[in-house]
Image (cartoon, rainbow, N blue to C red; front, side, top):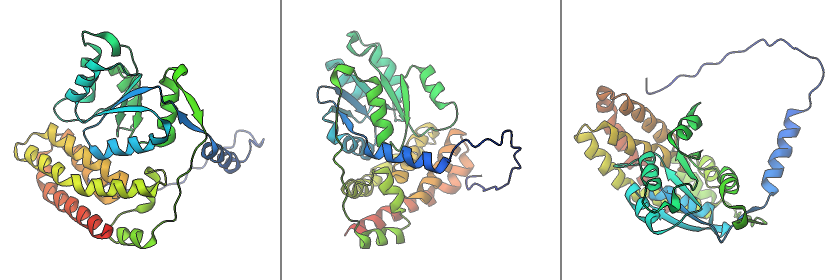
Length: 302
């Protein structure tokens, strides 16, 4: 438990029809090519609210949407989101589900129950790392309009905005690709620190400037996250502990720190099950790995 297993097997599948149905690889390649060449969203008149308690996640979404022209307000807590929703009417709200003190579901409900109904019926998209089967149905049943899994994929985010933003505020603009030559020496250093740079760049849509910014933000913010996590651990508040471990899981996956993400995921599951024995056994090692990863990033960037 907490480490996982890999099982492999072959299945003998009966052929129901000998008639060819086409070449899968060719059709997949065509779809990929189409996605790469499509235009990007351009909606300078649209106003959205982005809520996430992790600064790095906010920065990534802002950067992914930089060329869309969207007006983006940000909130790092449910309470801040409610305050902004009292003042502004938003065309769409992106809402992180797993936040301390007030989660996304509660925040969404309070926004929709505000005396001024300007945001009562506007779409609220749940942002969550919960990608298990049935998750979408669960969040829609809670009242969300739709949901996106984290780390956020730029194409899925764009499609979601195109689907729910008012049509009269949406235009399209030809994409302006951002593509620089990789700094091989930097990536080599990061790889020695256990960072999978290919994964990190993929989550940052191959934008190397964004990837460096995300790495810096992770290294700068992890101390505060560890402090909050430690306070929850000392108080045996496993629900809050789960929130902070979840944040580490998500942000470490975004930068390509796969080992740290997997260890965090195991403790997130333990916190959900209130398995204090496993948490006590693994907590100190997780803290050490967080600090080691952050130090490795700082040293590589220097």
